[in-house]
Length: 270
Image 1 (cartoon, one colour):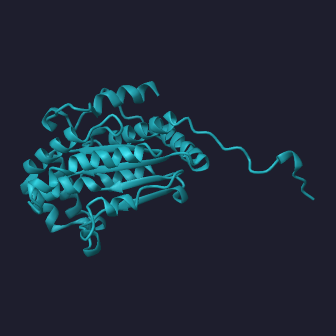
Image 2 (tube, helix red, strand yellow):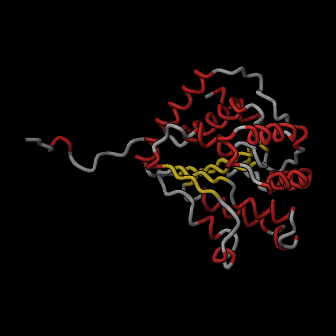
Image 3 (cartoon, helix red, strand yellow):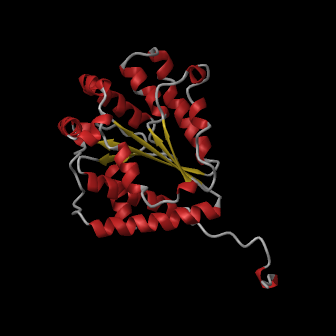
């Protein structure tokens, strides 16, 4: 756990601090070399802790994944959560709001999908799209989206005060790495289905998205729900770092099995 704490210091966005993503190296591994056995050990620990979380039922864990297109959200979920019990883990992918969702406040669809106590919830994209894509494409005026930073912070604080630990990961890749991943999808027939013309078009807005992310990370990294910038060019390190930070969060909950609901000494099996 010392290593996880050291790693966290490298990638956390300190509350109140501003950052420039160009100063965060997406190729960085914080001096760590690839060690598949270390990753497997961490994933085993994650499975154990998830079992405890599900039994304990005093807390929930909400993992928020944000990234530019091809940033590795799906891959992170597939590799890091590969061994957890699906009975206590749910992934929610946020797309464009439906007509019904548009008729409510922007957090309505988010709140109803937060995890139950005892569960892990994973947001593949999230309520942060409402200060990112809506800003870049001017879907709502600044007078609307600018208020949402405060509303998001209040919402997340309410969740944490009710037993939900929030981990927010921005998977940071370079523009060059994004291009390589798009090219790999084009060349691999088993991955062609992931191709999307809008994804390619969004590359034109790289600088605008970078600016939008920098402000969101600055304004919404709080003591109760800080942001972590995960260097994600190297997939093995991305997986290792995210897994370590999840295990660290679960360890800090001091989870334990609840007492039996019956007096075991009086149980007689015939």
